[in-house]
Length: 302
Image 1 (cartoon, rainbow, N blue to C red):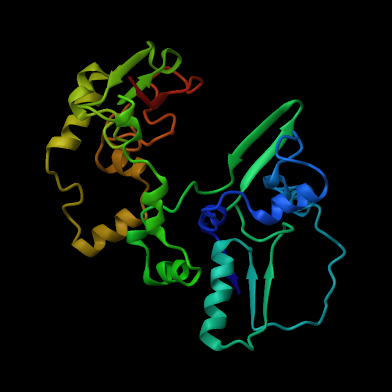
Image 2: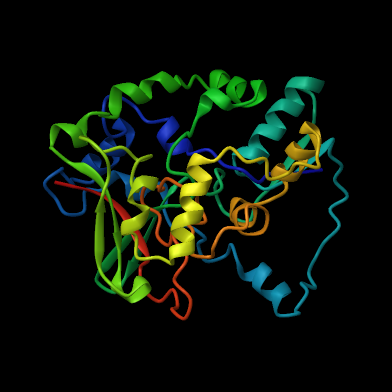
């Protein structure tokens, strides 16, 4: 048995250069619904509902102490049972069959009515509002670091990761005269403050340079700790050999590393020296303040 866990954004991977899926267009056009009609919305055919009704009742019942009583022994036998039809589960089944042959009998179980796991766009109608968001990962991140199995799966699926550079305008923000910056909100840090990033252009890795630490509305010790992390070459695990260090780091979150091993002040950002695009709360709130506010927001500005 294998259980799928990690995800790839399949909808993005299978995107076509020619625009909307022609089969989706044909369906609407066959109903007399043209592109000018408000009902014309090909993506809706894909059932972008996230965890739809019917996918969570059994889990909720288990949570509430109500075990299902209608389980049936079908008497079926399989060479492999995969729990989870996300990309990890599908990949497990794919590689298993590739290894043992096409005659392998494989059962893939999932609590949704379609495969793909979180690799889909989710849409929910709440009253008169449409809430939209991606269910899992936003894009294929750093494929250059993938294992040979993972990159081999992309290759077998016919996915060319270099197409990213055709569709992503890496000079967009620079062409618009935008720069990097980080906004600290009053609710979390006691004052509204915008710190500019260095130089021209928008760089996701240079939202708050350590040189701006003196201007950050955080504790003085936290500022000193930021400078220490950036400028001082310190071995924070001196009593461990390289292999022991790798094992320790592989089983320690970055936040725990900063707070428990590097011994930084709690105001130091748990994500490190540079910001993460679109993430909030990259800095811990000062003592005595809650996280009710938005925390820091990393954004381009002119």
